[in-house]
Amino acid sequence: MIVLSLAEIAAVVGGRLHRAEGSATVTGSVEFDTRELGAGGLYVALPGARVDGHDLAAAAVEAGAVAVLAAREVDAPAIVVPPLAEGHAYERAFVLASDTDGSGAAVLVALAKLARHVVERLAADGLTVVGVTGSSGKTSTKDLIAQLLEPLGPTVAPPGSFNNELGHPWTALRADAATRYLVLEMSARGIGHIASAATVTPPKIGVVLNVGSAHASEFGSREVTAKAKGELVEALPADGAAILNFDDPLVAAMADRTKARVVGVGESPNARVRAVDVTLDEQARASFRLVTPDGEAEVRLPLFGEHHVGNALAAAAVALELGTSVADVAARLSAVQRRSDRRMEVSTRADGVVVLNDSYNANPESVRAGLKTLASMGRDRRTWAVLGEMAELGDESVRAHDEIGRLAVRLNISRLIVIGERAAAMHHGAQHEGSWGEESVLVPDVEAATALLHDQLRAGDLVLVKASKSAALWRVADAVLAEAPLAGGQQAPAQERSNGGDA
Image (cartoon, rainbow, N blue to C red; front, side):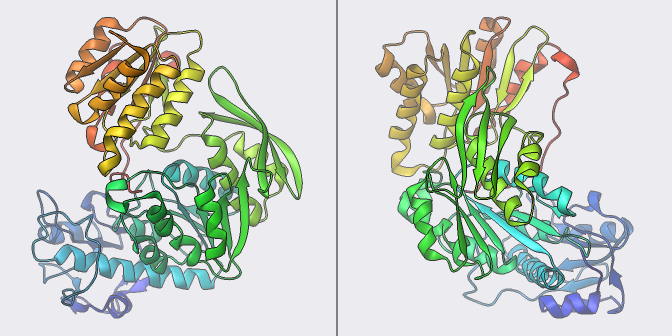
């Protein structure tokens, strides 16, 4: 964060100083976890499932915090913010049930005000904010954009999918005077959420990837989802750029909703930044020719799955807007790495069993992409799809799960393991599509799926694990990988911060 005095922060958030000198300055990071605090930091006190952050105020100061951003007086220097006014509209998705008095929401509103102030100050000095939204692919695309922009200047992006009411301002406050690019996911659970996030971090460039059926129980239809996603391009300035996936009609139609310049991406001939001659190698890694008005170049993505082509085009368009040459974009795309865990994370055991851990989250579009990747990679080997519930699909749930089961059959997946009654329609769909017998099995829980794999996996098999985050199916992937050493010195990934997978 930029250096601010406690008096300045109090004025920005509408709080008052408590046991604190207004001239004291915050020179470190803003943290909600006392373990992450260092000298000169600001501690954000939030209610938690087990501990109220206000009770850790003294410990935070001992860890180096200059003060605490709090909703009530604490035993430490603090900026105390007022309670929210009656009727104050605020999405409280992050604040847990323990926030019975609204203190968490009040602190998060203050944090958002602080982030807005900092970003506006930095934007005046040349910071460019890039917002990314879509029903799927936000995190992967955010990671790609960050990797393409880092050679241009210091870049800040959230870890994993930390994009909720806490993660969004927290990430923005990682930017400092040296930061040139701030890349953010813009997520939503309803109308107005992206518009609200855009007021905290006003974007100069907005990327809309797709409109799918994620969170259908909350949006109600793809048309309503498109209305919510389009709030990003509506927030762009006239001198900004809207990067729109022209392969998705609902996204392409957003061109009429922005005053910014529109840059279409995709395989559509109408796209300004296009991929042509897309091919996949034996590990489902895509190659294509990047075609732009400023030239062409060959790209060989090192990522698994054809769905990354669209993500790469969106990232390319952002980098091109910010002055990167076509040749450099192609070279950097060909050298990118997967940065966020449990997203098509490929690990190989010493016996040749390959696990595709894509268990972070799931919706019908991303599961279809995962199955196609599994089929492409497993042409000459036995393939397993271990799938769980795709949550928050509302009235579309049974139909969507049924269609996934049928797709597994049509793609000639060898074995399907469906976990839990909420995903049972996948199993039934597979049986009806292909008159499968033991090729598809419905099991009650992760333990049963793990036991079945333990008994039946053979050397060289390929296993896809995917479900909504609530199913925690990474436990299956972890168990399979723990049964034998990993090949080539691979290591298990570190944990990441996330918010549960907003749409």
